[in-house]
Amino acid sequence: MSNFLLVSIDIKIKEYIKNMNRNINSSIKYSRYADDITISSSSYKVGGKYVLNISVIKDIELILRSYGFYVNYKKTLIAGKRDRKTVNGIVLDTQNKQLSFGSARKHSIKKELSDPSTDEARRVSLRHLLPYIRHINKKQFNYIKNGIL
Image 1: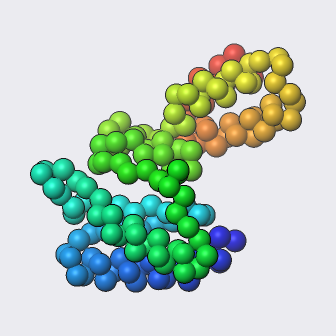
Image 2: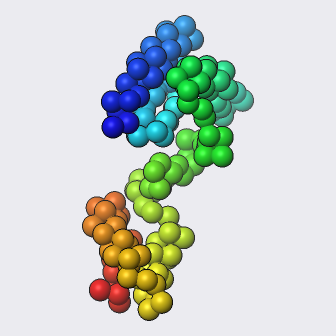
């Protein structure tokens, strides 16, 4: 549904990025999953470090606002090349070249599934999450599964 509703925004942002890349000889990339937008680039360096050109974000925010949307700065993250990035609850660990749910979430899920006081609806919800966890990171799946199934 989000793809259908946001296609006009995607077109405007992609057009903006294309022009920006041409004008400043950069390699900015845009992607979106549902309502989460990722802007990435490896072309901005100041003092040998990659930085974000905030004007790109502000211009994209103007496009979003023209359609009645806004940037949620509480969810906004600026990360460097070697930093872990989280997209939709999945940690993208570029240094270790793996995906995960993060240690805290892994421990929390195992604890809830092991706890007899966890209500059945929550337990069912977490069990439905297990195949997805297995697909993302088999080690984390095995850790959670060990002793609870």
